[in-house]
Image (cartoon, rainbow, N blue to C red; front, side, top):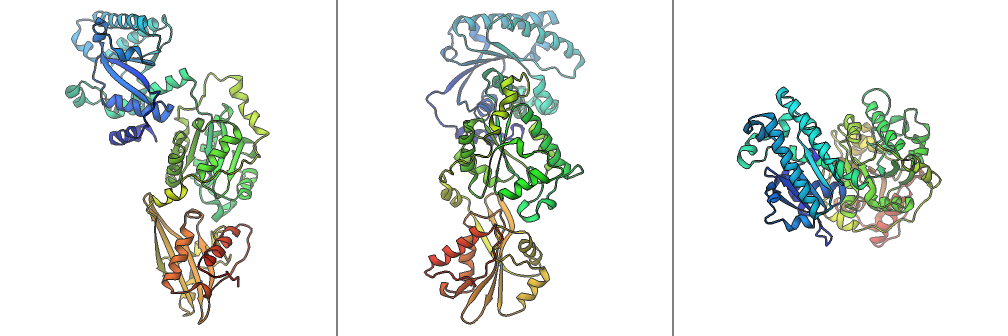
Length: 543
């Protein structure tokens, strides 16, 4: 999830799913404006999403400095966040000197009192610098005064809200209606941007950086599906749109140089992926950059756990990057502590900026350990961990509302089915390739039956993902071709396709034989066909 892309309702829904924890972290927010509940909700979301901190946040007014009564919540807080909005002071004080005096009095009184009762870290939000020329110099001086005073006390830090304004733009940062109606000058987007800046500081204070990226391959490191188009057909070069992936890889290499571990978790053929890593002229990510990999057809949640076990790191230090909502949601359900980044494969030109703007990786103040971290994993990168059992995978599939629709072949879908026969390798039983004209010619022969399949689930429409070509005689039905896109493989779609052809053509298992040609990648599909027919009470027969 990305901060500024969330709606308030999405944040509330997310917060309701944060588990109740016995060790919930108490945080006190001190402010002279109303930060409950939009800012507090945004802050709760940011803390759990970025730092896995379940927080109990209480907002109080600066009136606490009178000391009667002193808030108990603050005594137990692990963090004190202070925000003193100076906009009202700019209009209500008679001079800049008076305004500075008011801020200084609140600053000194609050810090002195807090430090008498708790040693918890204090984070003061510096007022944002705007383009208003009159305010600019005043606020810069105010910032310097606050920073200077905070530096005199232990465990006191500052966060400049100017960066939050830059993230949203001035018009997106403020909400004048909210200011007048609720005494909250920030928009929801402004609150989220402020929280993002706070998290950056907290991550530095806690040393809570992510240190491992788990990368998908297709539509991530390159454009296109490798299993269908081959190494020479993927989109990756130094001209548009291939340079979108090239630029993305540059950002990944920069993180690698900062000590971030790069791994691959891809549903692909291992030898094909390594051919690209080793031989593609524009592939910046090389084999030696990859510390661990799981390139297979198992579910990615299990593979990510295996990578973590091999590297001996916790899953909460990992960031998973993929273009598939299916895979992101699976990992989210199974490994909620893993940071997930869903790439929009329709906009690969944004990939590099996604990575560049992430704040969860350490890029500055690098230590020798940071710089040499990847060397310690290089010798282990080819180790293979035992594959863990699927975790509620069938239950997850059942929750997707998968719908498979069959169509007889026609002039509209013939071109797509032709592409499937020519590009699909793993999901290709006979390895026979057809042009659209050849397919249409088969349909005109009464002895052939051809079904195409479209797939959709709650995440969206996959379009045409499969086809079956049958040769039908009086006593036998021969599966001349069974084609399934690798995007839909291992999701129960194979069985749904077989169920459909048995239903549509009203055939029995003892009538079915199949044509198989081994291409080195399709043995799993053959085993499925054998098991499916056996499950209907007949030994499978290869033609």
